[in-house]
Amino acid sequence: KARNPQLAIWSQYQRANYKKLQNGDLLPKITERKIGLLNLVGFEWNCSEYSWYRSFEDLLDFVKEFGHARVPKVYLHNPPLTLWASRQQKNYKKYEKTASSFDIIITENQIGLLKKVGFEWDVSQDLVDFKISKAL
Image (cartoon, rainbow, N blue to C red; front, side, top):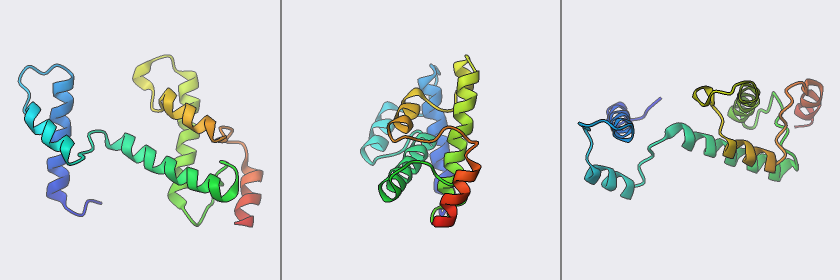
């Protein structure tokens, strides 16, 4: 939930107009000057990508602590990480099945990063997850 709803709405409006400009809108409602100023203050144009990398940082912390990237289905220390890890597994399965770039919800770069840390793609690790969660 946004702490400042007006700012959240304004930010969404800026992102939508930026996207229209990127897609070739001939009458953009955002100027290059405004884009430059927003870039100067670190405005995040793609929130979902930013959120993905924040969660990936959490995964890296998990790997540092436990020596593996097999996030259990129940991890009380960071429940959002378990949801994120599960979503990555599901997104990867969809990625493997689809040929359309329109349906892709996980990028090759993200897949590569997850593979580098030994992320567990097989969601049938319930028994292993249960044992790990008991140990935590």
